[in-house]
Image 1 (cartoon, helix red, strand yellow):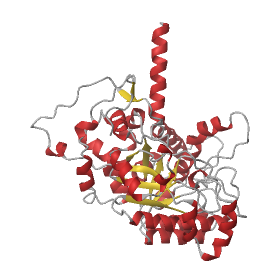
Image 2 (tube, one colour; image 1 turned 90 degrees about the horizontal axis):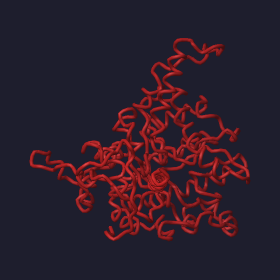
Image 3 (cartoon, rainbow, N blue to C red; image 1 turned 60 degrees about the vertical axis):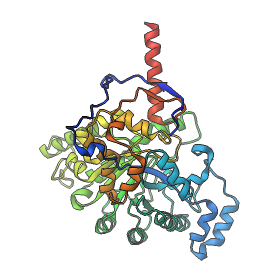
Image 4 (spheres, rainbow, N blue to C red; image 1 turned 180 degrees about the horizontal axis):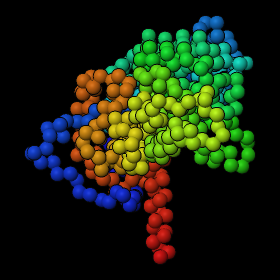
Length: 442
C-alpha cells in the first residue's frame, strides 16, 4: 500500500472518542501476534461478453450473436478503469492481496447473455424472456465455477437461480451444489410490480427451500434487489437510492415472518451490502408485533389462519440470518450484541467505486478499532469462513503474507483517504465538513 496517499481528516463520532493504541505486552495472548485471516464477503465478478459465448449451450449461440450485435455496456466505470478486474484471476489476486484480503465471496457483476444489466440489479425476467435469460445465467454459473476453480481456497462463488419455474430453480440448486459454488445461491427478490412471481412467503416455494437446505447452500440477497422500476422523472434515481434498503429488507422480513426459517431451521441467509445498523430497530419492531399477535391485541385482524410464529422474529434472525456489512461504518458495528457478533461479515465490494477497495485496511480501522481481538477476527474473516465453508488452514499462508495483526486494526483512524469514493468514508467526510461549518458559524 502506498504510504504517500492523500488523506483528509475525519471527525470522530460522539461515541468514538480517540483512544491510544492497545498496549501489546508480554501478558497478552500469543494469538495477538497471529495474523488475521481476512475474507471479504462482498466482491463482484463476471466474464466478458465475448467469453460468455462458449459457456452457452450450442443451441443458444445464434441468438447470442444476434443479441451481442446490439449490446452496449450499461456501466463503463471500474476502479482503475480496467474491466479486466472482473475476470483476470491473477490481477484480482494481486489487487485483493494489495488491499489486505486473503479470500473472497463472489457476487455477479458483468452483464450475462440476454440481459440489459447485471443480474443483482436487474428485475426478474417476465414469462416472455425467462428462457433466454435462464440460458444467460446458466452460462454465468458455468464460467463462475471455472473461475473459482482457479483459486478454490480463496473463492466462494454465488450461483444464480430464477423463480419463474420451480423445477428449473431446483435443478440449478443441484448444479450449484454439485459444481462447488459454495457461496450458495443469489435468491431473486420479486418487487411489488413482479406480479407474475409469487411472494417469497407463498407455499409455492416449499420445495425450493427444502432443496437449498438439503444441499447445505447459503441463501444470499444483495442491495439493489427487489426495487420497483421508476419512471424517467425528477427524483427517480434519488428515490431508488433512498428506498433501496427498504425493498431489499423485504427478503429478510418475508423469510422470517413467512416461517421459512421455522420450517427449515438449517437454512442460512445473508443480506449483503446493506450494513446492519438497521437490524436492531427493525427486529425490535417485529418482536413488538409478535407480542401483540400472540396476545391477540391486533384489532379487527383475523389471526385464526395466520397464527404467531412459535418464536419471536429476533430468534430466527439470531439463528439463521447474517449481515454482509460491506465497507461498514461504526454504526453498523454498534448493534453487534443484538444481531450477534458471529453474524456480521466484513466486505470491501471490490471492484466497485462505492466500496472501500483499495483502502480496506483503513476501513477496518475506521469500523473496528473499538472491538476486542476475537471480535475483529470474527468479523474480518472467521464468520465468513464458517458461513461459506472456507478452509482457514488453507488461507493461513496468504494471511501470513499480508501480515495484518489485531494491533494494526485496533488503531483508530483519524484520517480518511481523500481520494476514496467509499460510501462510508464519503458520508464521514461530509459529516466532518458539516461539523466544521457549524463550528465556524458559532
